[in-house]
Image (cartoon, rainbow, N blue to C red; front, side, top):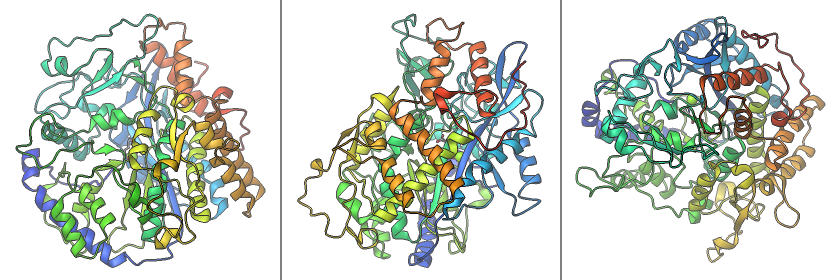
Length: 638
Ligand code: GLU
Ligand code: MG
């Protein structure tokens, strides 16, 4: 989840003293990169996915499942046997926030040919197999977005009691520091966010009110003043970064052929984020309760919200420079392409000095304000050995701020002195249970970028409407119930819109309000006669014009079918399927409580589905698979 430096981490007070230094040099590093590569052209499409995994252990006798805190060990072996032994190894592994998490990517990026779409799923399978082969008896590697009993007593193996003391990382009543990855970056981030904010983070997720859920639903925390004050009635209260960053997601990064193509894709895909997030909804349960949301987004957003009371507008500004309207983990605040400019209707807080400096260096207004907005944030971690850097050849200070702005999209300049091009990262998706589903979502998004570029599509709407969509997207069953602002005519961009601006298609007097309307996800994805063509039909017509081998076409069609049916409601989202599983569980008392035993049955079932040991047509449809797994470490017949 970001830059990993080695060394001695500084406390918040020390980091704060260096904040201006980090920002100043971060900007110089950005300028070096920008000037060196702003005119790079003709980089080819390359792309890659990132899947985050959880390690779980089943106790079949006591019907309990726990998160195993062995991520660091498993990662070490994966890297040793993989990339360190063979630079062309087909998988790459990285640490993630939880000590029970790891992250896997393909060893090399995928290229631009259609047949690459046919290798994504095999690579994901290989990752699952590689990591699974290192696990102990009764352990499994799961792709679940949020672990339903995260933060409940004894949720880790080995078990640890939270120790809510000031000197610790989270100071959480529920999430022990031992569940945080041991790399000092992660605990330092956690502690420094809390210290910068001046209090523990506060996450309140609305509880799902079932027949027997107490109303109002109130939890009391008599021993903890902070929790007593922060927890809200009818909400599930959480108090640690781990409740957010301890969730898993699915991300895709693309290399564009030039900076302007990257900026265009960044903008176009930003409008798609809420739609695909709702389609990928997979996280309905928190801290042992059934919630009323389906997506993790707002939870993570609150879990890393380092803004002070002044910055959040609760107290007059005295020690801080700005009011800041969003957490560091949130949706983007400005479009980057010229076409996007007229839809930039969110008030943007920027560091004015940095903005002026960037303009003076020849950077245009849109890019300058984007960077000046990211740089209103303080660095959250700093390593003593990494304060003084070579700005012409290193980018750690730039990355420090950049990689702790966790937004729906990320615009990524090339690393210094590398042959990597300008990239964008698509970050809103929730991870799915199976490699088939994860491949489907990834291929759908990558295909969409091909279509956007080939047909010069235009999805832009005012950014404030994208933000409204983000709110709707997280609600329970948003995929079927939610209405989303979407552009009516997506074929309107001028011929040379991508590179040269917006062509003649727009004139400023055009009323933006007439350009978009509220649509269901079914309409957006599948189309509706006379209203909207639908993204899948557009993708299909693109595919018809492409040379694609039969096997690849068949895989792609299966993937698009999944997306299509999830959008129409013919198939369930993971979130909906999990809700039904729990509500049909014989132990469920319709009181919104998920017991250890219910959690065990659910995760066991998820693992069986992931290993194709049982069918799940309501979630996946009738899928015909090409490869079969050869067993998992957990025998489901137990
Ligand atoms: N796990 C985080 C999420 O679910 C993302 C962390 C990262 O940026 O890698 O969005
Ligand atoms: Mg990650």
